[in-house]
Length: 76
Image 1 (cartoon, rainbow, N blue to C red):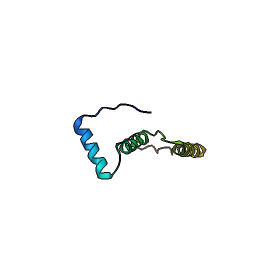
Image 2 (cartoon, rainbow, N blue to C red; image 1 turned 90 degrees about the horizontal axis):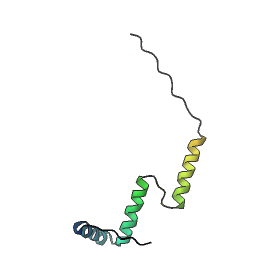
Image 3 (cartoon, helix red, strand yellow; image 1 turned 30 degrees about the horizontal axis):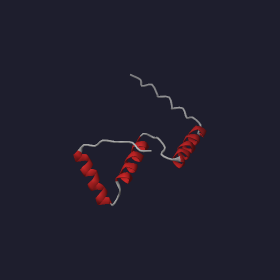
Image 4 (cartoon, rainbow, N blue to C red; image 1 turned 90 degrees about the vertical axis):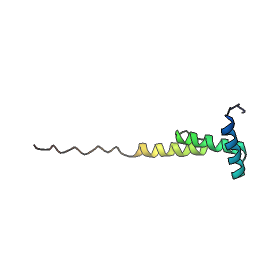
């Protein structure tokens, strides 16, 4: 899918230079940036990530709930 994204000239020049420095295409930089953004917000980027997240949630649900210890009352 193609989408049009606008950048100011300075930002685009910096992205082009970063791509040259890393020998990466603009598309590779964009893929990495969006994958990092999704990861930051806890959204799986592919099936493997979704399965890992699902398994983690399932393991946490299987753990017995622990109740916090009651606090001792302080005497004045």
